[in-house]
Amino acid sequence: MKALQISHHGPISELKVSDIPPPEAGPDEVKIRIEAAGINPSDVFGALGRFPNSLLPRIIGRDFAGSIVEGPSELVGTAVWGSGGDLGISRNGTHAEYLVIPRAAVSRRPKNLSSEQAGAVGVPFITAWSALAHAQLKEGEWVVVAGAAGAVGHAAIQLARARRANVIALVKDEAQAQRLNREELAAVARSDRNDLLEVVKQVTNGRGCDIALNGVGAAVFRPLFDALADRGRMIIYSVKTGREAALDLFSFYERRMSFHSVNTIGIDVVRSAEILQQLTPLFEAGQVRPLDIAERYPVTEAMHAYERVAKGAPGKVVLIPSS
Image (cartoon, rainbow, N blue to C red; front, top):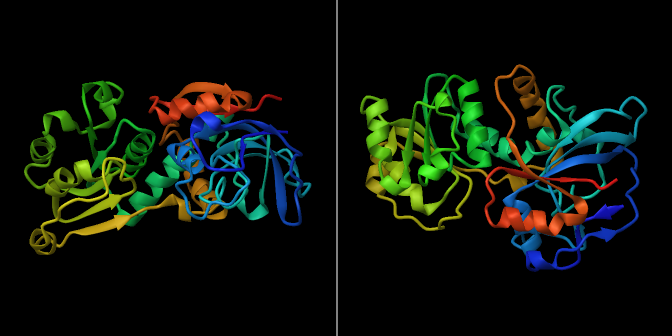
């Protein structure tokens, strides 16, 4: 089979597709024919060697949609989807024509999603789901989503709205703001105008937000902190704009704030399947919508697809097997 297998970590320009024997399913495993596999920034980081527990050689890639071709007879032919922080790092991943996973990691994909849509759900929606779970989001609360124009931001907006929360989007500039669906949002703030606090105070009648989802990093830490109400919760799941931020400890404890972190690398393929099973009825009921697929590449052009993601191409990029 054709697979994006790496034997060393290095620049994206060195990625090469290999012809290797397809995997065989062992006891309590299933073999999946991949139909579509999303590419995430974490896949790029995996190729570059950013994860210390990465094993080599390794097929990279975390998200997938496909059908079971080998395993228990009652599962053969089942349309499935999946993801996992172990895929592409400590076990072979999804950017190939076939994948083997534990039977316990099987999750039937929503009937109303195409394979491309389902194959791009994993990391963005699992990250957003986990962030909101840590935040213990309640109906009617106010949520500000930083990085709202990105894949995780899209997922967070969808999931927060499905739980009847009020959502404020924070984006970098007008170009990102144009990518949002304003009908899904209570308000939009922009970092280039430094207007988050003003916007939040206006739409919450001066109260502030209950939850801030920080998928950006240090650059938006202070604006998000200031925009939170007393007992506010900030969830941090990316630090791409910086790792260090100043914190007024007096304000932190006086206002009874809390911070939480989400790292989906620690959510393996079995736990990811459990989360996806909870997402399935939301997709099938139309309560959340999948990400738009912006670009498609055959596995044989994986290097170009990875370059597009590394350069920050808007929208989801997916790999489609050649066979």
